[in-house]
Length: 298
Ligand SMILES: [Zn+2]
Image 1 (cartoon, rainbow, N blue to C red):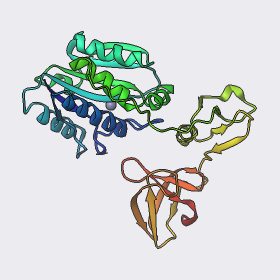
Image 2 (cartoon, rainbow, N blue to C red):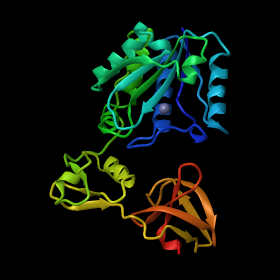
Image 3 (tube, rainbow, N blue to C red):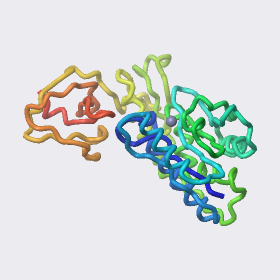
Image 4 (cartoon, helix red, strand yellow):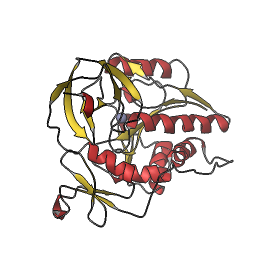
């Protein structure tokens, strides 16, 4: 079989994916790479139909279709993660056609512990409407709910295997499922406004890193351990704009001071500030924002 595999959205420019506890654009590439590896290892042919950058959403979609429709495919599959606060896996086909393979994608992923939202009508979706081959768009799970923590625990390999086995049947040499490495302590971190106000709790996490990234997107909330100690919080920024005082200031990807540098700002540059995270300002920068040290903004 020839199977076109699209890792969802672009990673830069227009048409990028959802960001919650996990980042859709990153995870679709991790899952998609493993899906292609498994398809090829089983003696079939995976064709990568992923587009990393586009100047517009419509350009990103037509670039994907150019790759998909260049050859005869038995299946075109697009891998996505959902957002908006729900739970579970769903799969879109043209007219909601209940292809056995599409139904099985849902049931295989549901077996891993996700709710089965079923096969739905995707004819409103460009990549479903425009593919010559049979096509499905898989929303693996939600990036912004407990789904994301469960996904991190079971690991991308289990998801990729569930998808590929529904298309080509059982994979013989089953690779061991190595869950993505996470640090769990048995602790439960609660996201609340204050410890005393239990009714303000909006989430709870067993993994500190996930809890922190969730709080980063919810200014005004703090993280409390089971003893009620405030272990992390994001204050609303007192400044809403500022000027760079360092001769060159690094703009980083996350609020972690040694995270990847995504840009540089010269002394005197003006920045618009969204919020303060620890000692970093989250500033408007590029499409997805960035973080700079608060020490060098006046
Ligand atoms: Zn998506």
